[in-house]
Length: 260
Image 1 (cartoon, rainbow, N blue to C red):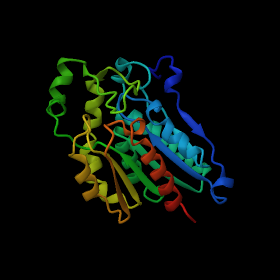
Image 2: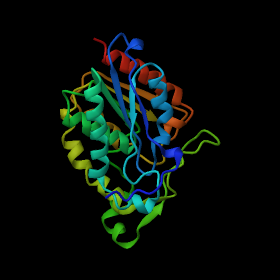
Image 3: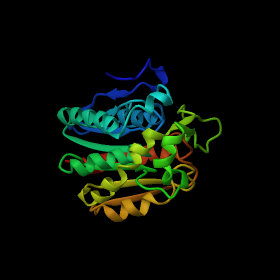
Image 4: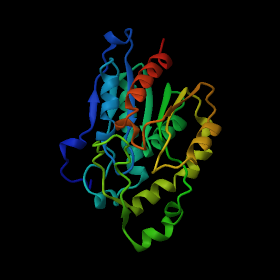
C-alpha cells in the first residue's frame, strides 16, 4: 500500500496527449522525470513547452515526493524507477516514438530507461544528471543513514531571484543512499545507450558536482551527442535563467530525432 499522503496541487503530475496534427502526422511522446526531493513542479514548464508544440508529455510524480521528506524516506530507487517505467510503457503504446529526459536524479532514471530499452528510446535529454559524486556527505551515507534520518535539504539551488522549487527542506538519507547504490550499475551499463543525446549542464551547480558529466559522456555508445552549457543557472536549471535554452533546445532535439 502506498505511503503517500494528500497531495498539494503544486506537485500534481502532468499528462498531455499528443497532437499529431502539429507534428507531421506522427504521434510523438516525451517522458520527463523530476529529481530527488523535488516534484513535477520543477519540470512542468519544460513539459508544457513541449506539449504546446504537439508532443504527448508525461511528467509523473515519483513515489514519496510532493508529500513529506519522512514519506520519501520510506521509498527506494525501485519505487521511482517502477513509476517511471509505467509511464514510459504507456507512452510507447500511445505514440510512434518516445524521447525520455530528466533533471538530476531524474536524469539518472532517464539514462536507466535508455539502457534497458534502447530499441524504444528515440532520444535522451539530460539536465544536470547525477550518477557519481565527490561530496564527502555522499560518501558517508552508509554510516550517516544509521545515525540520523536526514540532513539539510538540497532544494532551491536556483540563481534566478525569487524562484523556488518547492522541494523538501530535508534530505532523507535512507532514500538517497538507495539512489547512490544504483550508480555503479548505471555506469556499467552506459555503453547500452545508443540513442541521440543532448546534455544540458549548469556552469555552477551546488548539488551535483562535475564528476558525472565525463562518466556519462565517456560511457555512452551514442554518436549523436550535443552538449549545451547553461551559464546563468544553478542546479534546478529548468526553473532558472537558462530555462528557455533548455526548452527551445529540447523542442528542436525532439523534432530532429523523431523525424520519420
